[in-house]
Length: 380
Image (cartoon, rainbow, N blue to C red; front, side):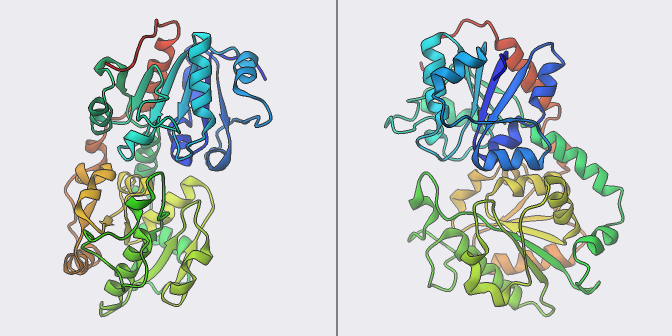
């Protein structure tokens, strides 16, 4: 373990997307940053070609902090209530080291720093850097001091916007032949982005009486219900599109075996850039609220969020930014499918106008500036 100025810990793929590129940007400021990663975050960082050290699971947090001697401890968030991130925040506080939490989206704000404390801010760090104002408002509502929640943007969004501009220079048919070579040229291609039907609040991902989309009635999982609705809607079209289900990193193909005969292909693995290119080559990307929906929209894909209840629209920023269309009823789903696949016009908002660019440099500048800052209570 080498001594470093800024020590970053991540275990969730969403957090990995947020920190990729940060060590280099921080290095440009004359400081050294080191990422420690484990689990799906390590896999995602590898896919993004970002350097990291595996988290030393046999070593407690006190030894890790002593070995790296950082001036700043930065942690991503995850659904793990026993995340080492909480122990690192506590350890940093005992040693007088400034701590920072990175939050990439608005969902589950009250569980990001809860752990097993029973309090929404039980493991709150000294500072929180969020992707946008929507996320900031979530933490202000929880009681975090206004000056301790900083908007940095989302570094991953910059990379996706740049990638989308590259895709736009290609012949889309060429990309289509690369990723869907066996599909007839006149057949529409739809990609469904699968998610997990559980999380830190499992009840949020299961059928409730408020659902306006209920699938075929035999399953209770949120994602499975929406997949059934999409399958049924596609089956009513005169020319049924080719459907690929893109698995979430924590999904398995076996979870969707009951619908295998209605699905043309499954997709998993590969690099982040290859995945975005595949999404761009499709005619339509359908999902719920996975962050990949936001990325697809920023890359220039037509995206349609299908939700079992309207209130979940707050979970996906690209809906509020008018980059993603959203439906919560069966008739609306079928109408929007036809519009998305067979009309030239879609949404008017351009990706580059929807989000602030330069997030990587902004977050790197914030972190560099926090070194040596006097910390205080984050809560009012």
